[in-house]
Image 1 (cartoon, helix red, strand yellow):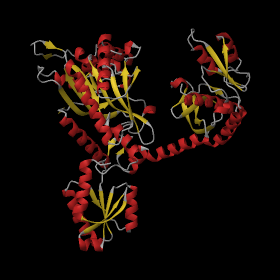
Image 2 (cartoon, rainbow, N blue to C red):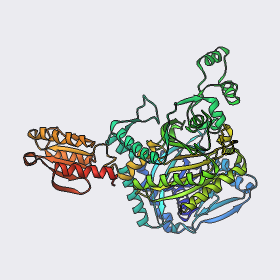
Image 3 (tube, rainbow, N blue to C red):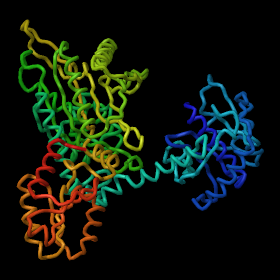
Image 4 (tube, rainbow, N blue to C red):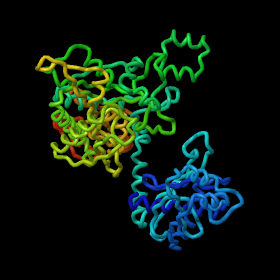
Length: 611
C-alpha cells in the first residue's frame, strides 16, 4: 500500500470503531482503502443515512484525538476462530452472537497464510494491515456517501450497507480534495451531456446503449475527421465490417471463450433454435453444446480484429504490399453488468477507432513508432499532455494468454525497444497484457488530476498463427506476418466523456457543436442576422440565429449556459455598418469587427484546431 492508502485503511478501522460505539450490534465485513478514500461493509438493523454522518464523524474525531495506537496481534487460526465465535472480532467486546462475516473471511484464508489481528482502543479486527502508528496520524476524515453492496460482491449473499469516506493527513488536503470533488460534479459528463444535448440513454433502447444526439454527433464527426486526416497521412485504408459474425470466427481468434463472460450470448440459427426447442434442450445443455463447439451460431462482435484479419486473408499478399494498415470506426458489443455501467465511460455498445497493421518482423519497430507518434499527436491536439506510458506484460496466470512463451518474450522486447527509441519513459506492469499479446497504454491525467486509460498499441504474434496468415516473401516462400492493434481514442463514447469533463463542456471552437450564435437585438435585425449566418455557413461554420423574443441579456445568458464559443450581436448600428459586435466565451467582449474579419478569424481557429 502507498502511505495514503495505509492512512485510509486506518481510517476505515476508525469508522468501524465509531459505528460500534454508536451501534454495538453492527456486524462488520471488510473495510479496504479504495480510489479517493475507503469504505466499510456492515450489517445493521438501523439504516445509516447522511443524516447520521455528523454523529459518526464526531465519534471518529474523538478517536483521532485519543491517539489510539494500532497494535498488530499475531494469532493462531484456532485462537482467531474462537474469538470470532465469541463475537469478539470486528467488535469492541465479546458479544452473544458470532462475528459471522469475520468467521467466514477467516475460514477462507489459505492454510499457509499467517493470521493477524489489529487493535486500536477496544476495537479488535481480523486484518492483514498495514496501518499508521496511531489514530492521531489520520488528521482529517469525512464521510461521503452510503450504498448497498452484496457480501463478497455475490448477489446470492446478504446485502450489506457500505459506508464510504475519505481521509487525509491534514484538514487542508481534505478541503482541497472536497473542492476537486465539487468541481468534478460540475464537470460530470452525464450532467453536461444532458444539459448540452450531446447524448441520451433511453430505457426503451436498453441500458448501456447510448443515443448520440445531433450536437454530440457533430463532435463525433469532427473527431473522426481529425483522426481520418492523420490516418490518411500514415497510409491507412478504411474498411467497414458487420456488427455480427459467425461464432466460429471468434472461436478461432480466442475471443470465445476468453472473453465469454463479457460477451452477449451466442445466437443460434433460427432453424437450429427451433430444433433445440422441439428437443426440449435445457439451458445447461445449450450452454455445453455452445462451449464444446457442437452448436454453431453468431456473435455480436466484441472485437473488430478477427474481421480485419479475414480482410487481409481475402487474397494472396506479397511482401511488397506490407505493411497493410486497415482502419475502421467499428461498433462492438460487450455484456457489462448493470452495476458496472457508467454514463459513456462503461457501455454495452460502443465504437472503437480501431486499426490493425499487418507487417513483417523487420517493420515492427517502425510501425509501432508510427503508432506512438499518432497517439501523442492526438493527445497533444486535445490538450491531454499529462500522461504516462505503461507497458502491459503477460501475468503469471498463463491460462489467460494464448501462444508460446518465446513469442511473448519477443513481442514484449520489441515494444520496450520501440518506446525507448521514441525517447519516452515507461513503466512495466505484469498482468496488463491482452490475451494475445503485450500492449502499450497511454494513461492520461485530465485537468482534475484523474487518470484515464486512452490510447493503446498492442503487438500480436499469436492471432496470425491461429488464422494461418501468410505473405509471400522476396524468397518466394510463405512467411508469417506480425499484427499490431492500435486505437488512439480507445472508444469514441468514452473519449467524448473524458473530453466533456476535461473541457467542462466548453469545447474548443473546432469541436463545439455550435460555433457561433447570432443575437439580433430586435426583430428589425433578423434579416441581417440571417444574412450573417448564411455567410458563416458558406465558410462551413456551425451557426444559429437566436430568433426568440428575449432581451439581449437573456440571449447572452442562454448562450453562455450552452457554452457557445462566439456570440455575434447585431443591432441597429451593426446592421447599418454591416459589422458585428463580437463576444467570446473565453475572452469576453472583442468589440466591433467586420463580417469578413470575424469569419476569417474563426475559420483560422478551426483550421489550426486551436484550444
